[in-house]
Image (cartoon, rainbow, N blue to C red; front, side, top):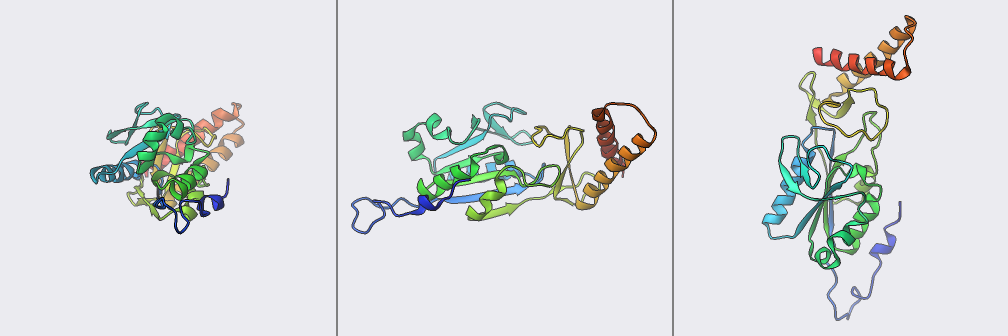
Length: 244
């Protein structure tokens, strides 16, 4: 992760007596929360508001996310906004073109946890290029560990908004994302088929069910592959939680 120090140093356009006015500094706004908390909805609402106020906007999402559309950011309830689907943020300026980039006022980034170069891009866009960056993403993965570099942006941010979802088990505020499958990789893109939002109590209960299922299965000497054990554990945990 590179330092932003060089981006805030005075340059020739900042010095007193320069014939060129200094570039207006940008802003960074971060929207985080678990899955199904309305992060993308909030992001699109702010981007549309900026556009309605006469500012030039552009939206970016990871090309990894093809759940609902290839060239649009789409909320879980079907609201769409055209976007650039890219493997990384560094390529955005080249793809959009120098002239178009210079004219941009606001850049929106959806599912920001998938971009490894998020920190460097936000630094340069806001500190050097004068852009307003509004990003949304998961702050934690299904194990409640930091996901990508979203949390690294908080020290850079003007504002941070933490959204909550509704626990699918009890209806209370949900701060966490429970994975309903046995897969263990951090990046597993999906929707309600793979994940559900849960409160603290039911996140812990779900993990307890997974561990208990493993102990029971192993104690009965059922000879299956580890992945089959895990599949049954995850399915059992999800079923138990949803039946409560």
